[in-house]
Length: 212
Image 1 (cartoon, rainbow, N blue to C red):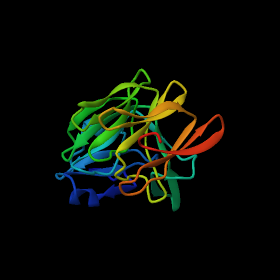
Image 2: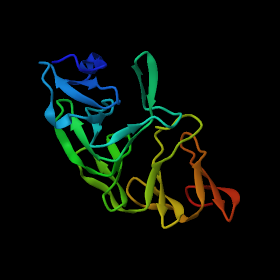
Image 3: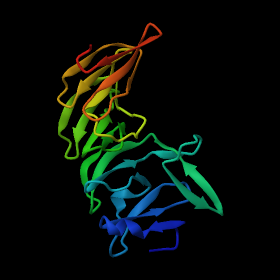
Image 4: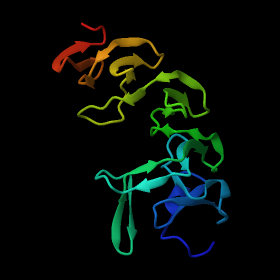
């Protein structure tokens, strides 16, 4: 393996059979335990491994124009904060760097409970599992996980979904929980009590999962 990288993340070997090797532009390739480069993962963005797999982007580039970073790299003594991966195609790999899902999606959100929010090449959003089974059909204009004051990746059993230019809420079985009629929806519940702050006609209210 040539001395061509600014950082080799050998800690990756603690959780997988590949390690990420970073270039100055923030993109990386991957090596196996024999130090051999995995050609299918060259010039890529590879996320951290969780639940035996992770997302990968092929053909995109990293931006450092925003404040919130996806990770930091020290380049020539300076910290470069890379914030998002733009362009390319997204897929999912296993612990050996083999594709579970080939890079065919326009976007994959960071996984939660072994599921990925995905955007297809037609700009429609759905939810898939790590083996590319479709859990929620690709028919929405956008899908998001809910966040709360406690943290982003919580066990909230709903998705906030955009249909046309209005937001609603569905559950993981694609059942409609909140009608698609709001300008904005935020989750404000806790434990088993699920409440939503809603905005309609620039005015706010609060409803529960039964729309009461």
